Amino acid sequence: MRTAFRVETVRAAERALMDRLPEGELMRRAAAGLAAAAAGLLGRVYGSRVLLLVGSGDNGGDTLYAGARLARRGAGVTALLLSPDRAHPGGLAALRAAGGRALPAAEAAQAAPGALAADLVLDGITGIGGRGGLRPEAADLVRRLSAPILAVDLPSGVDADTGEVSGEAVRAAATVTFGAYKPGLLVDPGRELAGALRLVDIGLGPYLPAEPELLAPQHADVAALLPRPAAESDKYRRGVVGVAAGSARYPGAAVLAVAGALRGGAGAVRYTGHAADAVINRFPETLVSDGGPHRAGRVQSWVVGPGLGSGGEAERTVAEALDADVPVLVDADALRLLSPERVRARSAPTVLTPHAGEAAALLDRPREAVEAARLGAVRELADRFGATVLLKGSTTLVAPPAAGSVRVNPTGTPWLATAGSGDVLSGLVGALLAAGLAPVDAAATGAYLHGLAAREAPAPTRALDVATH
Image 1 (cartoon, rainbow, N blue to C red):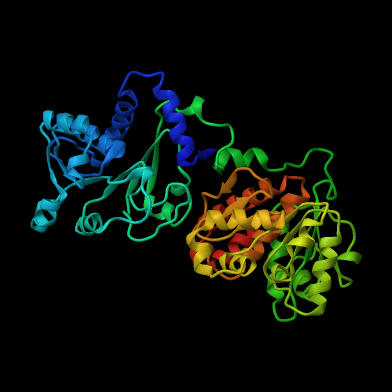
Image 2 (cartoon, one colour):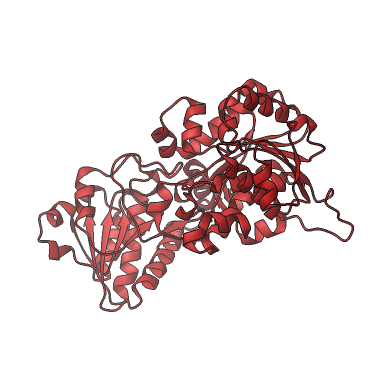
């Protein structure tokens, strides 16, 4: 499990650790890890050219000390100081003693393009303490670079706590972060700018709290949660999913939601709606009903909304599903028919699965605002509705209804940006709810498996293959 902590939390852990260490030891650990990562990217250190973009403070110090290590191994290292008067004095002295050179970034900005040629650039401009986009001088300098960039702790211009980007930011080929992951490295748009991630352990573990800001499940975590049938299992013990979806206009949504539920391991699926013929033609094992959720029979979870349409009948279907004393997943058309009061009044758990546009409508703000601040949006929705919220998108996030860690899905892929993939996800999560997984675990596990299937499926048939893998 990857865990990410807010800057304030990391800073507190660093202070607690530094009280127990010799002066400068923490920076030496960070610099050693950074230099090792840079050497790995370079392949051959001796004779290589390394450019350091150095801001003020400890982030610049880490960069300068790492540059000194590379210079001692035969690299030609040049540091461009964006704040020459505030550059870390110890790091600057170490670089010069190792044969590296340093000059004000303003001089480099006036130099010919060839003067900035390098095999690798280390971005030590702002780090995790930075706020807002790059300053004009730094932005102009970064635009002139053509070599791959290794970000130090965080790409400059990215908000470490949220992944938000306001203004220009560094696009890194890779990022070395120290002590713990930061949320901005795992949530878009910051995640996309961070490139490949490498965590350098500097000893913060014992000083970090038990509950992180973000959790990113890995393969072993998901495998441990997956329900497995036992010798005494039957279709009822494995979980029965109710699916209220589809319409005469959108019968395929029902087919895809049922497909997701069946492929998610449900013992049986009960379907109610106007797409019964399409569902039976594709999945004859489905138990169909035309009487609405109240008359569909016993289930352990409901999935309601994909392709449901609008109008009085849709409203009744959603109301009947919410009346059931079982977990209910609400998606697509059904999201428009919700009120926070109705969801909060339920005794059983509710899972909402909006994409950014649907989340924007629920929060009454522009879609762009949700996409720019995904972490804040998913937490606000979960708090407002008292529900588990799975916010779909380039980074899928799952927030619990109360305070707690947000799950971030690491298997997302742009191939999922296709009609119908969300319907499959709804059915898949519904099956995991019916099997007894906690809502946050069911949503995060479903998102992980959904992304994994999309990565493995052949590109031209991605949506169908996700439903049938």
